[in-house]
Length: 83
Image 1: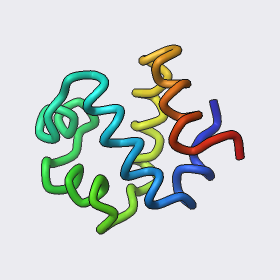
Image 2: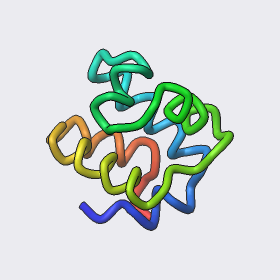
Image 3: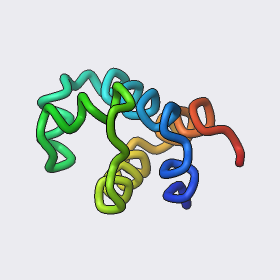
Image 4: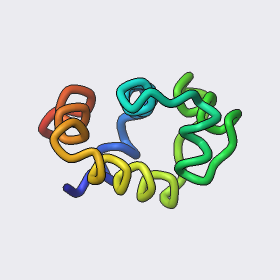
């Protein structure tokens, strides 16, 4: 799953995707940040479209989606589509 380009260029969608990943896995912004290695305010800024995740963050999000298996694929397709 090569999502880096799509995620970086689709800011409103990346925020929604991050929120849906987090909610699907039952994590708060703080807990999701802990999983990825980022702070709660960073996750909040991504979800609200105030900042764009760095390349490192995109990579970690991609890994998290891969670990989610089919659910991760479904979320990606729903939020980013087949670009």
